[in-house]
Length: 238
Image (cartoon, rainbow, N blue to C red):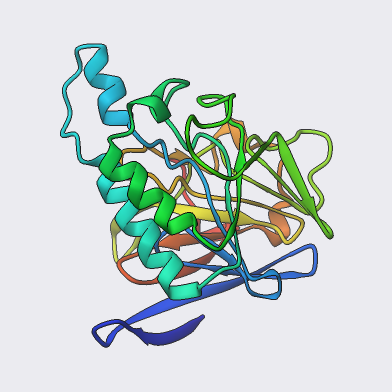
């Protein structure tokens, strides 16, 4: 784990993972940086989830898109990537990009300027976003890595995926702690949801069964400005 100062001098710590021989930095925001590729990866932004719920009569504070873009802007400023991959479910539904307020659309486009940007299609957003730049693909292969939204049950080597919104639970000093996390065994990595209004599923749930080798599995739990690597044996269900 690496500790550094950022912005106003406040310390933060990163965790380093390795996916099929490619170095990866797990950021406390839930973003993944691949330094050798100058690439930033985020997953499951679920932009405009608040407005999607409002259309169905479920009112929640409509600040999710602003909060998510704020976090994204910080991650981009921190790592200055040449390439950004948004790993599916970038928008909460197929029409969400059309509902994106112009203020947020302008801000998103400014974050995309002078960078290669890839939208990976997800189950919530199977089509390319409306009126936004970038390439839209089902999956993307870069060297030994394959980026896709939903983890494959057949070919997991070198895979970086999202979709499952992983979380880990530990017991520390008699207190249960449950947080979103990255999860990897060195062969594949599943990313936490980056969006402000997103839930999370325990990585010991049956949905993760068969995706990882238990002996080398690590959860990288997101804390306040820190990432905590946790071995499989320290994890609890629930």
